[in-house]
Image (cartoon, rainbow, N blue to C red; front, top):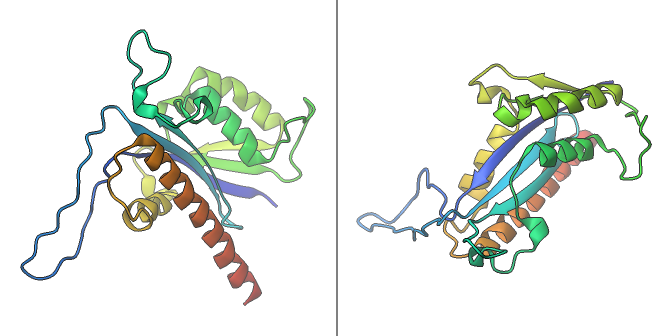
Length: 204
């Protein structure tokens, strides 16, 4: 049996866009706006088709002023929580999604083949990614690229939409630390709910 998962990235800004809202007749509702100042939380997720398991990782970003080691806009966040979703980070994430242990031997292989479905983001097509693809194939991990401009074919896209438009109760955060903690908490809860729903479906 082949395992299949959809992999995709998403970004969360200091003030999330509000697709729609409700308010009493005649009363205008205001949503506070926080200037991003280069602050952002980026997430990568992999959603398994059969089990509905969601694996995710997040990194916060903030500009670092000259002659400073860290950004004052990232107060409270550790160095490990900061960074960009570059090729090296995403490659480690795919190995994690595949379930490879940290102390796995060079010839480690999955018990079941895994197909990772992803879009044509430039990092996914980078030379470094293609080099690692040889190792993935040897471990029974294959990449499948979607046609260009076809997010509707990825099952994880509705998940990002649900998280941003319904799960994130607070649309505006005034600190990057709060946004990072909020995104992590919401994605953790979303992962739990997906597993619970899948369990109820299988036992019904």
